[in-house]
Image 1 (tube, rainbow over the protein chains, first blue to last red):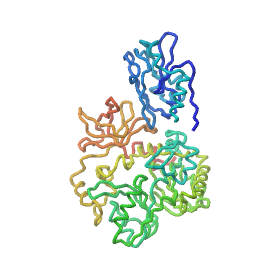
Image 2: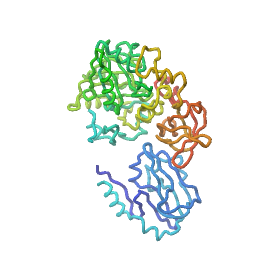
Image 3: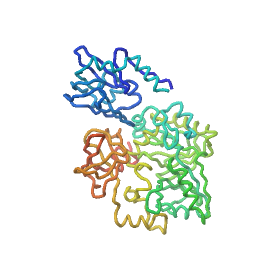
Image 4: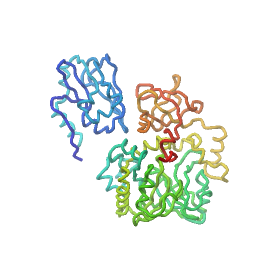
Amino acid sequence: MSEEYDIPEGLYYTEDHEWLKVLEDGTVLVGVTDYAQKSLHEVVYVEMPNVGDKVKQKEVLGSVESVKAVSDLYSPVSGVVEEVNEELADSPELINSDSYGKGWMVKITPRDLDEELENLLSAEQYREHLESLKE
Amino acid sequence: MALRHTQLYEYHRLHGKLVDFSGFEMPVWFEGVIPEHNAVRNAVGIFDVSHMGRVLVVGGDAEAFLDSLVTNDVSKLAPLEALYTVACNERGGIKDDFTVYRLAEERFLIVPNAGNREKDYAWLSSHSRGFSVELKDVSDDVAMVAVQGPRAEETLQKITSEPLSEIKRFKCREVALRGHTALVARTGYTGEDGFEIYLWDTPLSNPVKALDLLEKILSAGKEFGIKPCGLGARDSLRLEAGLSLYGNDIDEETNPFGARLGFVVKLKKKSFIGKEALVRINKDGPNWRLVGMRIVDRGIPRHGYEIWKEGKQIGHVTSGGFSPTLDVGIALGYVASEYAELGTEVEIKIRQRLAKGIIVKSHPFYDETQYGYKREKR
């Protein structure tokens, strides 16, 4: 099976298939990768943290449920939840149709961004990680 | 252990997302659970159900033999009629649930669950002593597909001259489908009108007929939007219809009265395995009852989740999922009998959180004037 996954350059990734995008104002957007949405398939429900929640890197931030499976969302960074994507409450399928865009899940004001980015993967490293999962 | 395949594996391999189900490599979906589910609720879909068992029971004592084993009354069946039944152990626990077809006076077909094929056959064999009856497991020689949905009859009618409207619910007959002779039965597991088709003489080693029939039905149903459907939609459809899944909602530790299958238990029958236990359970009432629940909050209940009320656990979810028709999480589960009343508010522990739920009419969950085989014809 040679399925192709979209892995945009310029984002940071986790081994658990989250992506992180650093915005100009210093906040970050977090979502799940194309690989994650394809594995989950039809997403029907998303559980999110509350705005103002303090989160730590690698701790559970929420969950994504598809018709057949449920998967935890782990926070790629530590910080405070600034905003959650309210649109996902009514349209969780945005995670399938636009996982890196309209399917973003949480906006976080990070605490130790520079330090924690060291623990994340580049697009190339994430691609290698996906390759290693095939074996 | 190598996974087993059905006669339609070649199609699944090319078009489906495959998973292991009861030891069979089967498609969980082709396009997706939700579009396939909706195709069946609103139009028509076709499922490969060849992973289920097919056992022929033939002989002068076939009727008496089956009636000594199952809870429903096989003697009431005329040829070309079918019934749904359970078979129980001595404690009244459910060994399996299946459909029994009377093909002729002394010839029956029973269709066990995939996971119970070997168990059932061994059990049938072990009780056949003293009866003039012959058992034949033809599972691997007969392909089986289900064509389900409000446009199922129109779809199949395009490939046969036999008037299918004459085959009423739980009736069957031999029909020629574009050159293939098959037993066509108006039965199914989706809550919708539809047919189950048994294609004789189609061994695993030569599945050409099954693949050909599948293609013919798919092209016949094209104008209605037919979709090939996987096990994912089969599960979500049967859950919405409130139909039990063996191994989840019913098993040897549950009894038909608790599982609200009392309608298939005929205690007036002379004797059958488990009757004494079932008489007692019926008199005392079951301790646990299968109920349907709808999530009022957000969230999706799943198999194994706990059901709580007023700070204590009162039961557990046996089947749960997202209902595409109702757009909400629904579940079947057992609760202690005193909590089983319709309208009871419960909490379902969805991971770390208690989600509000309510016990609702669930056989089926959906509005029967709009969906299912009883719907008003449009």
